[in-house]
Length: 69
Image (tube, one colour):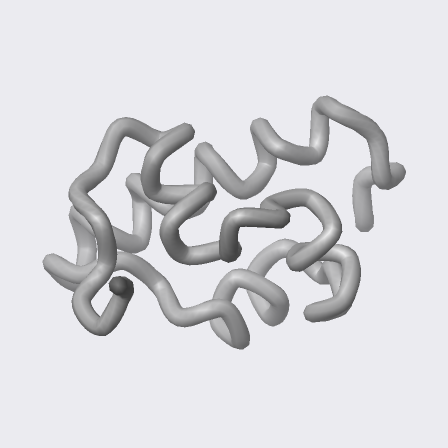
C-alpha cells in the first residue's frame, strides 16, 4: 500500500536506495525509485528539489550516483 505524501516519505526513499545500492552496486535511477515506491516522478522531484538521485543518495549516506554533476 502506498504511503501518504508527508515528510516520512523521505524515509521510504532512503530505505529503498541503500537496499538497491547493496544489491546492484549503483544508485537506482529515478524511474526505478518511482516503480519501487509507488510515487509518481513529479512527487519524487518535489521531495528532492536538488534532484532525486543526488538528494536521495545524500540522505541515505551513499556516494553521488554516476552521471550526476
